[in-house]
Image 1 (spheres, protein in one colour):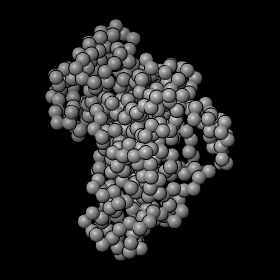
Image 2 (tube, rainbow, N blue to C red):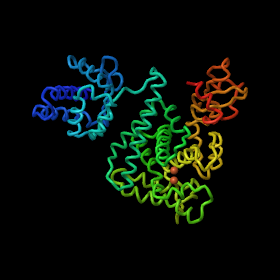
Image 3 (cartoon, protein in one colour):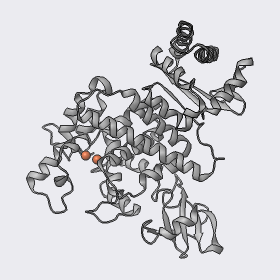
Image 4 (cartoon, rainbow, N blue to C red):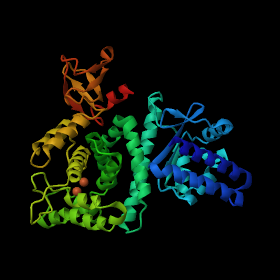
Length: 444
Ligand SMILES: [Fe+2]
Ligand SMILES: [Fe+2]
């Protein structure tokens, strides 16, 4: 199995050498590209992807196995590192032309790699390969980590915006690009889950429909992976979640954000976003499958079969619609909106719990908060002894007693696991834009 990968990688390096020596238009290059492509095709015939990382001076695949590529190896490692490439991933579906373009990109002088290597691939239209730094590790300092995740979030945001506007214009979309971008989020979730979720739970003033769509996708992917769905299913759930409100983009902002009470007509218009969205996603059934149609249609149906659209026959929500419905309401309530009061996480929790068993599937709702915690990681909270702390990690067994770091007063600074220490409890949430602002910096 790994022999195939080793062969593919060797052929790739030979192809790269040929490109550097003869250029990519030379017949010699074509010949070596043919060989490399055949090797990749073979290696990808029984797996979804090949991920190769540079660890120190070695190349590694699937963490523990190191290649012995002899003479080729050292200069190749140096060559890739100079171009900020420590991780290469090749996905099934990779085409020969793409592989050729990829070799052309990495054969460029290292000065070209001042921008993110992944961006160079994007520009060249290569969707089935991703390259970049190795996944973030805990050793890296916090600032760098945060920048990485912020750019991951923003990068995904760009992709999402592009794909959604293509869908709105009824243009063809490339589901692989979308999946790759969501895949990056899943990778981000598995390494720095809390930091990434924090980005999504951060209250933002610039609440646009796209932010909501991406956030709901992030929550739904995190939630479904914790529920035990397979990675490929998690990706499909992410896509369905991403498009859940696509029908809203067809409804005037004036109606959507009207501060006063809606007329019956206006309310009917808003409710129609479910049907509009489903009709819309139906056009993409060949590319994205049926799930986005189902979820667009059902995400406002309730657990007890009330909600909308009203149906002649009672029907139960699909489990993915039920997952998205929870993430949808959670994000909508957590976001700071001009026309609404600022909701603290515990208020969001109690609002949602009122609908347990009626609006939401009770088991799923419990699980959701068990995984998310009551106060998201990073929240500023006041404790029962009047000290101020930041939430560091949720405890699955008691959502009200997470691990925290006391940051004020200075002489009390320490980490406390509230599950172990019963003398303290969380009293109140402090708004990070108002009274909590000054304490937020103390936790850096
Ligand atoms: Fe909706
Ligand atoms: Fe929504």
